[in-house]
Length: 76
Image 1 (tube, helix red, strand yellow):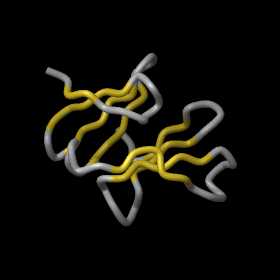
Image 2: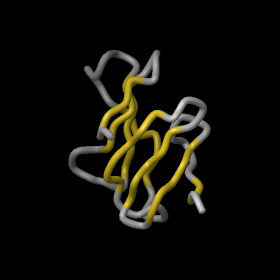
Image 3: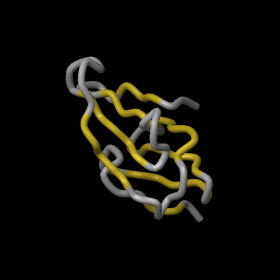
Image 4: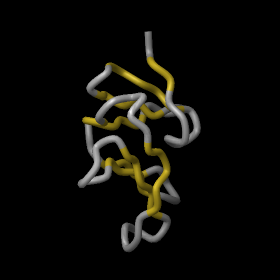
């Protein structure tokens, strides 16, 4: 697992200063924008590219996103 993923045209990472925030970059990491920021998933710990979805291990369990990290659902 990783704290940063290469999703083709963009990079996705866990914010190094706020683990409840995900950031994306479209210029190889030169600048970062917020993609997701909420305490509802807990603290993001690791990210995995699982083909058609992103998996996130968090302090509240395993979550998945099918829209590049814009929204998250708990994996049961």
